[in-house]
Amino acid sequence: MLFRLSNQTIQVLDAFLEAPADWRYGYDISRDTGLKSGTLYPILIRLAEHKLLETCWETTEAGKPPRHMYRLTREGLRAAREHVRAYKAARSKQTAWGGAGAKS
Image (cartoon, rainbow, N blue to C red; front, top):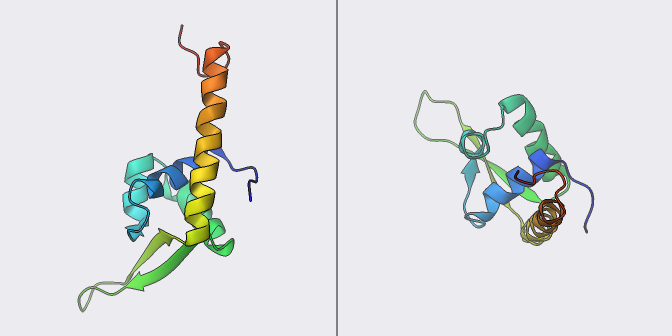
């Protein structure tokens, strides 16, 4: 199930791969990737719609709003590994040939 994903979506998937079984808050993913909420949350929603992420609400203490949490599904883990690997391989080829991302 290899389909084209944006660089930002690859960043999000890569962040999940750091601890694939763990539930993550959107804020933590934003902090790890540097993506703003207007970019990040549509990506999370799209990944959940494609069944690559599962979501849940965490209720902490009375008076505090629940927080949305995310983690990779089994299919999401497989897809994340595949996409991130392909992205890094493509970037490596570009660098080796002096293309985008090459250091002067």
